[in-house]
Image (cartoon, rainbow, N blue to C red):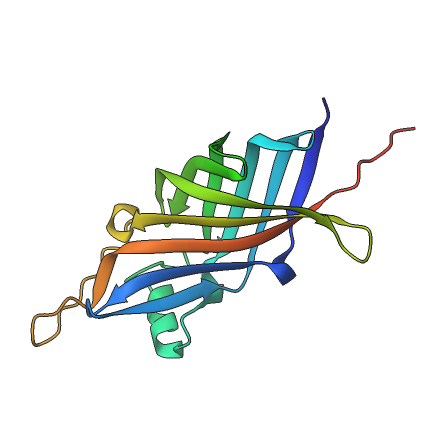
Length: 182
């Protein structure tokens, strides 16, 4: 069976994260530049192979000073490690439209296994005849496990940044046309 190639459509996708700030509120951020592919067997996504790359320099928390701090060596060290990379090791169906995707997440120079929940929104054909597939991906990681260990404590003793990071992506992939070999 021929492999079906899908390419992430960044115009119809978003990648976000949420983290506690001062333990009392949540800061939401996103990555504005990213790319990805899915290689599937035929039209089924079960056992698909997923590759996602996030551009660390595109991080946006709606506060430029904080974004610069996140890009600096205290956090992501974007000059040295410009990308966050996810490579799947399994993509298993758990329900009619749900999956678990397991894989290796690399942040800075640390690679750890993670498992994320995937809700498959279905496929549709756009106005131009392109077949698109939509997914909602969620999960959690501990930032310290990935070398993001900066600590800040306020004068009153409050922790500035939480350890748990909630991940969320709403992504759309475009099915690639099969090449016909002559």
